[in-house]
Length: 423
Image (cartoon, rainbow, N blue to C red; front, side):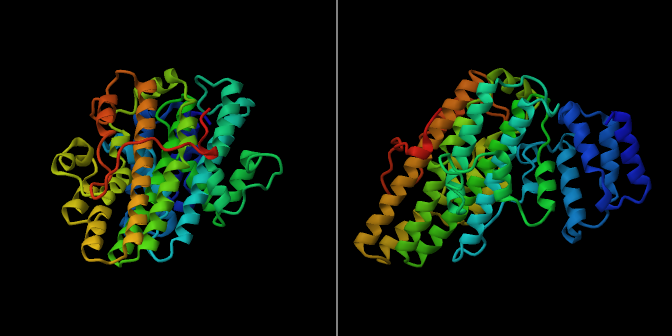
């Protein structure tokens, strides 16, 4: 659709009463995809701002369709509003990352997160194969070679294989890893709610038209899904330690550790980005950086309470909600473990198993940090970060931050298993 056609369609929607169920999402997405969010013209943004103004009902009282539209417009207009950041770049409000809520019954939330992870990875693989076949002109700049697309497919399937196994799907195609095509992956994780596919489409608003930005956004969204899940497991670990349930604490912490160690292929997938493509679209992401990841900082602060210098750093000032939780006395595994040992809540063998799992989890975090630093060094080089940090030197300094202090945890490597093979 041409820009003029888009303007006519949106103007018609506005003059027709602005029914949320008839909002021209496809036309808006097409316009944003045509030029990239950073380059959408002010006339278009002004019309979208007018559409948002028509949603006069407070967000908390809106019916689901109106809430979806309001959240989408907030994401689409983040640069217009001067609110652009990591969360709006990844459209995390639209993704609505599954949370546990009930620490006694984790399996529903775990399944929801696995399904979302598979959907995100399946979607990027579908885009890769569609673009390679010439069937789409979405994000046309710097298309990767067919060899790179094949590698991305292999790594993507490997990245979701543990989730597929937990969903009871792995091995459905004899002689091949998990499932065979992106369409099969998408079918596995498809929601019963048909609105799920629309939400997935709305969470893809690249700032530029570089092909690899699609991969970048989906992998970062996958990591946010992962960190949100790990944070839920850590909360449950704290609750179990506080109740003197060493076995339950060990199981929840072990599951969190498995999530981190199984995510290695996601880094390998991200490492297939073309550095020049990354540097091109990164010029327009200033103000949005992984340093603003609330889920990661929540995970870190649930392990142990950050010392004052860390809490007063740029890393935490950019996630004020997490900082406030810490100031309000958010408990940590470190504190809960010390209290359980002090109060004799479990026998020595049980305490030893918890302590060993804490060490294993810390090792997985250290490994994640090292891999993140290596990838950032390859992509960024000496360039500064986009989240108002010095870039890779910041990551280098953060690698050695203790995960726990109640047990001795050295930054040692995590042995690679079959599901962590590098390309």
